[in-house]
Image (tube, rainbow, N blue to C red):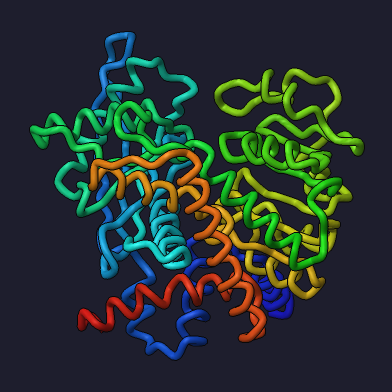
Length: 426
């Protein structure tokens, strides 16, 4: 009996890294801090709609392959839902649900008239031809066409999707709708109604948050040592922006390992050698592990890869004074607690990575009014919005004496909760 209890106790101490569970925990805490009743949490803990679709695609070898896809719409109390579509072999229903909730929070944080949405297809685009990807993209739009649209739910790019895939999706939706409808989707090529600055928006938003966090810590970005975990779309742009600002990017990584140089890596050279999926370390003989990269001596650490990278197992080994989350969910709740107790400033994902949805909103507005802004105007609006949002959350954290993640959730969930209350839903 004692042995059974000990085993159960050890099991209880194992950290729960489930993204949906973590999201529920922080939302519940945020709503409690704000004084909302339990029924508000019950309304917000899961998407209001979740569609599962099956997409037949004729492959290049003549076979028909059936793909599974999802579209989650978290909450439309504020306005239409908005969020990306990812093509990845590890897409799950639970992940899509959690990501749709995060999109609602991001929209609330940067004060956009949206709820959160998210989509995904279980596939590996790295093993598919251009023609197969087009068939899959168009098939997905046909499958979800009844629940999406410029005033219902607006998709966007995400992991392993890009402006070309958005163009195919927009064309397919326009065929179904029988008129040109660029506002259906964002992240399009500029010639099809896309916006300046969209491709680099997420990285630019993270950079703005890094600059603001550095100011709070009295750190000068020029000459600071920065580690970027991940070298995909966000990570590579981010490394470039920081390198050009005079920072020393002392470490980067991709799916195959990491590179480290205490004097600073040649980012322009790495970008030139990087493939379309963000892979570059496979060209080098001397690499370091992911764990070694996270624990490098640096001023700022930017997890820009995948979930659950900083946990209770390694949070005490993080040497950075600032951690800025560019990926979705890279730090667990226990990891967050440990970093906060150590005095490390953690800028959460729902704030740091909100540049993408902000410029997606700008694109949607431009599509709706048929008037397009310059790259300089987009950049100015993005800076104004993100700096205001960062300071709002930082001040909430200070006055409420909570960590930045809980402060961000409190700010993000309030607008949605109030909209639902005024509508009479709760």
